[in-house]
Image 1 (cartoon, rainbow, N blue to C red):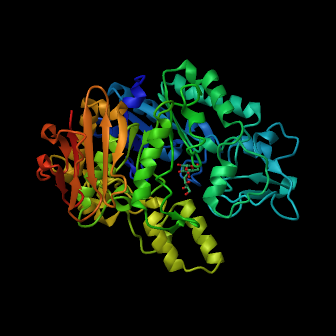
Image 2 (tube, helix red, strand yellow):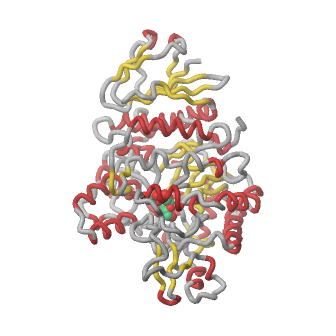
Image 3 (cartoon, rainbow, N blue to C red):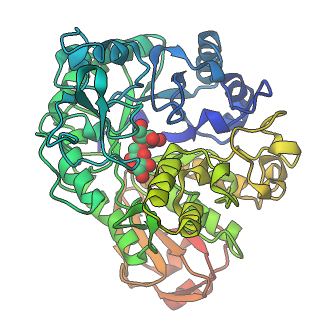
Length: 556
Ligand code: TEU
């Protein structure tokens, strides 16, 4: 296995809007991140993935970029950015920027020009089509409700927006667009940025604009929007023209990247990207109606996804290991237990993250076990995905109380409430009124209350990062499940020629007896890490796992 720094790195994702507000305007900002760099460093992480900080009207909280060469006023100035980058490098860490180039803002000068006339030089920077039968060019739906085409009267055509209508899709078929993207990438790389997380990079190559034959939106994503005919070519060109000239890390975010298409992005022969975020485990509680049609997670399916992707990527590719980010609910609420077993299950999920093959990503706040939030009214929510879906439910006369319940379960704002620093006013996030309300449980769940507590979730994350560095088999070693059909325990092996490890995770609130097969000599079992080190008599060939108990043991 060829070793690389970005394979061994632990990445900490910062959603700046919710991280720390330094000037009391209620919005997190770059000086706030600078203020907390020592905290981030104290976690032991190597890389910070910073969500978009470019100038933006914030229709989608920065994922609608108006100027790729300027910093959003809410977040500060370019001087603040330069200071942040210097502070990150001074502490021996690296910075990944969020590259959002499937689309930009409708307020970007390119789009302002493009919409002026059909023969404007910027017209083909975007995807314009005449209507059909008095409506949009086809039946494509936006990720954010409604159809994916917006009629523009000035030129009597529609433009494509797979996300909001303020996020027009860029036309990657146009070499000028690709040159613009390469140019802006070089600008940031020449400033010293260490790589990019590439937003919805899986959908930049569009197929023909036929109607989608699928009712299930996830099938449309997989087979109509994502993995288009030229996606690998575009990324290989990007690698040739830009990335190959720097020692950088790249991760492609890809709705629709699946077990047939993934390797074209990350195989060593592809010479495209270093790794991808696949979403095999991230949409399984989305019913046919998508995110706001929640369904329970199938635990056996959850375990199977980890095996399938490990098998798929292990020879040729490389993957990321993550359970949450700014687009999904809090991991302890989604995959753990944010009630009676909050602490145990938060630690169990951490042990899962840090014992899997792939580059590990931790989302801000998960290191202290932040949970979902349940605001009383829809007006307290900010996310455009939630608001657009609410409008759609209302227009269709659907049950709005049920909608709010579904937002409590699967809404993205669950992960966007301000980071809970201490039990002071507004959780120490701001001296003003936060842009999104603080989770009321901040008095119990916050960084300050966990600092110095060796039994805290925060202390456990720090131990996990240290463990990962001490046991490189956990980065590169092979993986195989044990009793994959067990209804409550996620058990697996990790091994290479240096060492072998057993991981036992009880995803239930019942005590589980688990038979240890005879492939290893249990007398050699030595616990490396656990959220509870007492787990019965392994010598007897079986162990008793307490509710939400997590154990990583070395067996060779
Ligand atoms: O997300 C794309 C994406 O796959 C998720 O947004 C998810 O599919 C969506 O929430 C539908 O459920 C990226 C960014 O991470 C997200 O924050 C942006 O809103 C989106 O792209 C558009 O840039």
